Length: 461
Image (cartoon, rainbow, N blue to C red; front, side, top):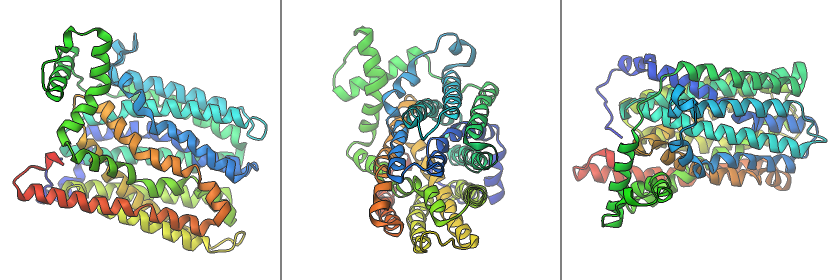
């Protein structure tokens, strides 16, 4: 990551949001965000609304594990050219379109299923949506990183988060409003249409520069030779070995060679940073419903109002990253995310069935979404700075998979924890899960300071 530029004026920092790459990634961020809630918290609200037990709802969080294992097929997305579409759209956009079409089809299938009698089919359809969404994410993340240099990645992350959060607003509040008025089937059918319409955004976008086959093979050969310590003559090996080494192993080898022993610390930080918010997220809507809030009230406060607070946090973080670098916003986000879970614990002390005033829900949601906007934007920018331009899709997929895998696994037990101990204890545990992230940010800050004192550049962090 390039050094921060404190001399940059606030006006210059804000104007970065008017640049074309930021505007384009905002639209693709919407495409990435739309399916997420529809297989996560909006789906859990649907299931709870029709009487599915909370323990079963908690297990639906494991559908999200698909996002956490996308690194397994990321090399295919990074290297495989889709016939016909590649010539028309290019490497990144062709895969984005494939993902968008699959999402629309999967949501349409969910709209005609009944959770009470076809819960297994609902789970399979949600799994297909999550798979196509994760595939789309791999291509969009590579598109975002390759469309701008490191100095703009903070703003690119904020633009992506802005579009993503608008999509969450549509898939959260919009889907809940539609469900209240036209039923859950009508709501999910409308979401399927919105997902299909996002193909138009991909057609409008410009394909970023992509390395030629000869350039990739040369980079792969150099990396394998460097790590092995002797010439491997990769070009003379069978094609399957070339593809295996180049697409699967080289991205990992390059990262480990670049950071060496420090790579373990970085991967540990990536794994724990979002533990706190992911672990509590699956139980948010069931919690609001159990407190007695209506679906419309949840849509208005948790989704609509929360959207503006998240957007404010994202925009603020993009400017802070440009002026002060990444570590201060990362620390601020980590502390705030853990702290806001304690506010949920206080709200949960209300007896079940006794609905607190909407002002209390609004205050808690405001704090939670503001902190999420800051933490999410800073973290995406940091992960982007860790990738090598020769392996953007695979390396970022590795990082984002590792980012969500522990939290998704733990969140699968969230319904069991709530049923066993109650909401207050659950939210306190979720807050405690944020402590390792705070500690590791401090370690990263100290490491960066030592490098600076030794005259090293921050590009090694």
